[in-house]
Amino acid sequence: MKLNSVLILCFMLLGNWQLGTAAKSNEPTQINFTQTMPTEGNLILGVFKDGQLGPQGQAIDKASDGALSHAIQAADFEAKTKTTHLITAPMGSGLDQILLVGLGDRDETKTKLQWQDIGGHAIQKAVSLFKTSPVMVADVAELDNRAEITANIAFGAQIGSYYFDKYYTDKKRHKHQQSLSFFTESLAQTRDHFKQELEPVAKGLWYTRNIANEPANVIYPESFVAQWRAHFKGMDNIKIKVLDEKDMLKKGMGAIYGVGQGSQRPPRMMIVEYMGGTNNEAPVVLVGKGITFDTGGISIKGSKNMWNMKFDMAGAAATMGTVYALAGREAKVNVVGIAALAENMPGSKAQRPGDVVTSMSGKTIQIRSTDAEGRLVLADGMYYGDVTYDPTIMVDLATLTGSASRALGRDYGALFTRHDDLVPDFIEAGKASGDEVWQLPLNKNHFKAIENNVADVMNSGPDAPGASAGAAFVGTFVRETTPWVHLDIAGVAWGDKTTPSKGSPGATAFGVRLLNQYIKNNFE
Ligand code: BES
Ligand code: MN
Ligand code: ZN
Image 1 (cartoon, helix red, strand yellow):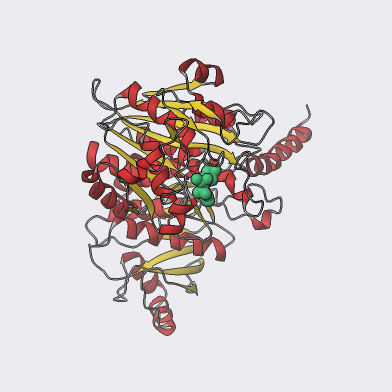
Image 2: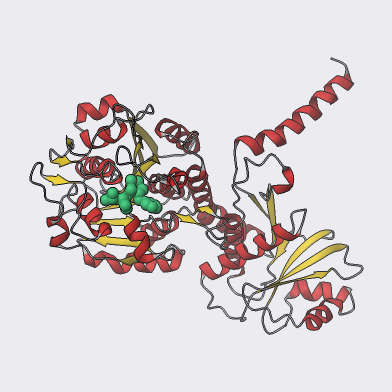
């Protein structure tokens, strides 16, 4: 080949590569740290409320004869957290524009989450203002834990820079950044902390969001398994087992099998073991509802918001995302993630209201509504997890009921348990991580409400509050001696607004940060 044709081919490949990556995948924003102050392009600069610039701000100010501090004063920029102000960079600095970012009070009491939110908010603002990626300079050199602070700002920025814009063919609409850079005075410390503790969680969140955002013609039980398999590839201590519909029949998993029956896409159960702890330590078992699309089945849903039911596998995705995060940071804990996957369709083979199915536990279930399908796939997933692993604790994550979402809105995931002593640790982990939870009741009446005169139980409890009846149903398939927490995330797994830490509208990956934090606090 002649040199010019090689060059043309290279350009074509380059062009295609950019287009190709935009259309096919949505990779986590790459985070870089640098010890060199930029001398061109755009800058994000942290400023505390007292107006006293940090060392890097001071240097810019000095080099520009006080132009920076003058601009801050002239604008009356108070530097409260989550406020920003854009200024033209002082002459001579070589820079184009500086986005001032409020850091609030100069104290050491801000939580990691607050620093993360500062990073997320700053980047979202910068992405909307700048055409090229800026360098962020938190300018916190005087604070003792500056490396950890900068790493947390970068983490917040990384998850805040999530945009699901891969399907836009118009490049001008793309907000996704290839990479972001952060200035730090302690390069090695900042980078190590970020890589070891934070980036694996950010990536777990990222992949969880990607999978929950994908439409159901892209993510169905088999492709869910394939995508997570690809993400887990090359990670140590990971073992993956997948049950197909034949395995389900053999194991007597009639509940998940029944849900999958109405669809061309066969059901799957994906089991990922991460054994980072000691050999004979009982694992934490996480089970996620993985309905890749919920039409309601024969008890079909209304059409208005049905499109949104592509995210009905958010619990299963967050389960996998959590295992990914733990394995990525080499957490010293044994964890098993189980994704109970099926597509709930009203095909000609679909199960009907009134049908009776036998679950793996041996308990029989009368189907009252085929739209209460999440609890059915969980019944087999949770029972399997309970008897296979004898867990130290079992947590299930599910977009289970509209009722939980109506009760707690978008602010809290709904927590249910028979073991009230577990609640404070979950509330604490929620506050620290940003995935907050609130307890709703689960009592004997809720178990009573799902008793049935044809089968052992039925899959809805018309006389009980919906979320509690759902919790009682899934709890029926976990031994009472197993510490167990049910998280109904129907209201929080999806967001309509951009927030610093939950990112742009769409899947929030609720559960990944909560469970990562809970496990870190209680098991590592
Ligand atoms: N996936 C839905 C719950 C849901 C609704 C999640 C809205 C997010 C937003 C679930 O499978 C469902 O249909 N639940 C029914 C249960 C009822 C039939 C007992 C519900 O909540 O109405
Ligand atoms: Mn449903
Ligand atoms: Zn559902």
